[in-house]
Image 1 (spheres, rainbow, N blue to C red):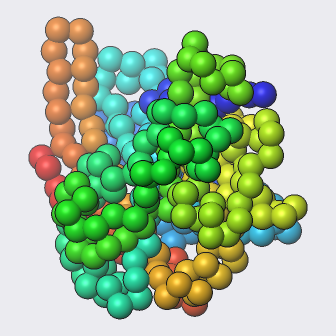
Image 2: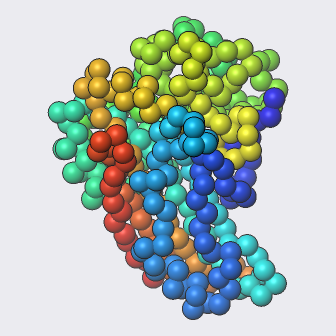
Length: 292
């Protein structure tokens, strides 16, 4: 079984059906063109499109609950020793009670969201993946977080992080995997309340009956590790429990050179944004911080 994911390389090499966006930077060889793109606030990913994914036109849509993409400008002969652009973004999500939605959205819409710990995602490194989440080792695990457990204090209400991250190294005793593994799992509460099950040797897929409702596609296909959940399954669960989802986007574009013996920093454009659902479609906007 192939195991891929973000952990293989910091910079991604090719787009996928679940992450089709590529920063248009490879052909920008002149410094003025690089600077122009660096400060351009329009030429950025359209996250209202990237927060859902579909493998084909006939395939049901998925919400992106967690993901990361990083891209470094390719080194042509002309700019091999010159400045290069480095761009990335991270997608996080939290789910809050309907009554807290506006308060939370208003607070985080003003914040910088580029810190990798903006959302405290549970990381699991003990216990066998085949025993998640029913084994007693996971009894104390909860993806619900209160104000006093939110690391940055950005989310001013009780909320659930719908994703956990499973970390395991080759050479440990979990013989159900055969190499270093870093994949996303659905929150324990989602597994239990929706009746999700993972089939043997299907490490990235979680099913309800015959239908896959949660997946990390990087387990079976080359690409960045992403957490995806079927839109209708998540919508139904949120409606039933009077909950709403918020996506927290953080990213940056930066331009620098790091020649042997010298380096130069030209600037950084940091962007953050909050997105939510209206008529089952993601909407939102970004705000910016310019660092020269």
